[in-house]
Image (cartoon, rainbow, N blue to C red; front, side, top):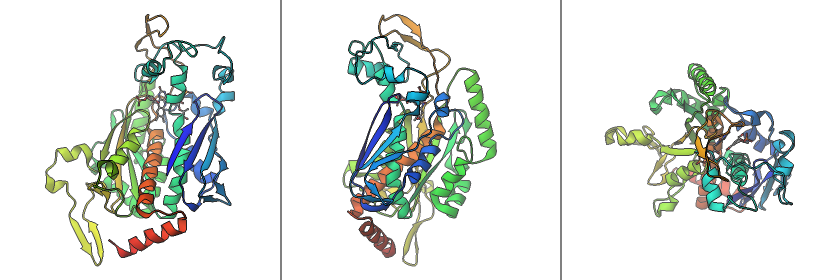
Length: 403
Ligand SMILES: Cc1cc2nc3c(=O)[nH]c(=O)nc-3n(C[C@H](O)[C@H](O)[C@H](O)COP(=O)(O)O)c2cc1C
Ligand SMILES: C=C(O[C@@H]1CC(C(=O)O)=C[C@@H](OP(=O)(O)O)[C@H]1O)C(=O)O
């Protein structure tokens, strides 16, 4: 199973194709839209959030609310293209020579602007000197279509009782570093309704944090950063429940589930670190506090704790999968940083138009989506299935066997 996305942030639309979904998975556009609107949650987003209202159009692959085994084709128009301000249809014109179009020649530190221009030669015609082509494809606008594509796979997981959720645990200086600090609240939600209960609870906070006091402090911190012309990063945790034993493998490095989950997070713009289970803390603690004792209850295997985050030897062990991602601060700041003009080489301060102050809450929902995708791919590798019915039978038979 694979997917591809295309489209520029300020072009007409984003498109996506999901290939390899079994036939018979229940999916409707509303299922996809649920996660698209969740991606816009979060205090600290910029002006673009007021313009976009993402609603997917399904152009192929789904009939009578179920997949057909054929590629699923998705379309998301960019509202900004027409509504934002006059000019995107000209700036992003497919034809012509761009005569009269304003060029962006001050690359922002921390964004893809300069390296993208160096790699693709945007210091010269036909596009340059202009970093616009880099801005428009490196932009996390692309994550809207990624969420849409991954949401199709997520419906397959949901129909098998597998849920993926997330919550934010740190925004800049406000937050916690040790999972022990939130495990009780999180685990109560997981026990009540799996990872879906976790994400539904987090969605009630403007910053997707568990706990009102933490949320309020985080919002004040974001307000202060904005006032100072600065931006913030943070940390979020993604949890998957109902994941069967046996996804991934130690047999080759690139089949390890933990490695693949790390790539799922780091594939998202501005994500800079990943932890699995206890993560960094595991490096500080003795083995007796890190390894989860094995239990046997009747014919069921279990663990007394879940410091491993649900993966041992690169294979899911039936415990909730737990991964955390760290997002760096947004590179576009009101407070100028040093740069140089692409056209003249002259030293200049960066220029600011608009931007998010923080997008950690949004990134946490994108990470849910990409983690769900990896789980779905690993599930199909283990169980196969041209039809959803056959896949479900195999998963359920394995679950019943309890091994
Ligand atoms: C959901 C989301 C929203 C983002 N919004 C912005 C933004 O408004 N302004 C900005 O400069 N960068 C934003 N970014 C970060 C840039 O996309 C990212 O830093 C850039 O593509 C360079 O990639 P890198 O940080 O991985 O090097 C956002 C990222 C995500 C995940
Ligand atoms: C459009 C989205 O995020 C954008 C990601 C982004 C970036 O540089 O990554 C820059 C901003 O875009 P603009 O320059 O148009 O304000 C964000 O709004 C989105 O998440 O859908």
